[in-house]
Image (cartoon, rainbow, N blue to C red; front, top):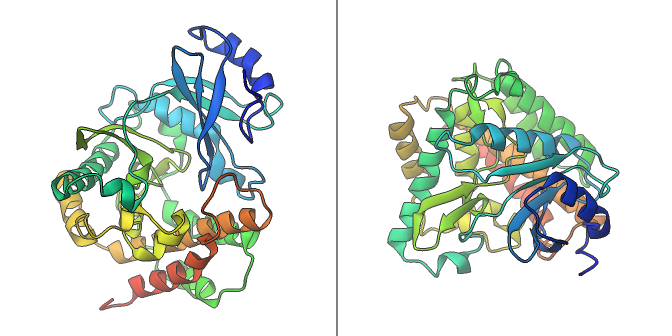
Length: 341
């Protein structure tokens, strides 16, 4: 048995796991699945079965963005809705067990497309099928009757956009390592332009291609959507717009310089927006505001990752370039709000 990867105290986890997961067949071992720009993710195994454990990052400066209970609750609620999620197994909100709250779900077999190199193993038809499947899954998520699946208290849809603008400004104040006038300008412009919410639904809050587990034989089949820590009840157009922002090359440094989501082998943002409009039947008016908000959010998240990296609190490789993305993302957010962008 190993001592455990960085960030996971296996000796402390094993007795808890034996009590809370009745199907475990023996002592578990673990490996870091990926360092994660957000929560840390580990694969656990007893030699027979496999599970995935997620915990907040080391030295997290934005605790509300790493809520394990929130992630676990939405995954549990979405089981059986047609939205592909992993099976929820157990939740521990007691930080004394391993030093932080954590959640456990069943392991889902499949492939994850993180880098351009990962995408290059598949042809253009598969890339297109993958991109459209993600948008269709987003539309299906937004159609889930959240009250019927027990998520009425999962958030306050009214005033969601105003709170998002305020929240991400507050997060910037927590994590900023630099003065960036474009962030100030973008925040002021968003604050002055907040529209009425277009609708209320469950939003993923961070959907991009590497937050999906795909069928290796058919990338158009999603086995599970993952990384639900940003989920809420909110505006579906904000969720769509963030997904489109991830198509912008300005995002690429956040994932170490080779982000599959920005590949020009995927359909254009306009094509994806059109696909979503058809699948959901929603009017995409004021998408400009939502795109700008998406850029603002990702700029702040990138700055938070950069701040953790400067404090040597990141786990894994590829964090050196993250800070480079922040000015470009802020500039793109301003551009999204301008007519004729």
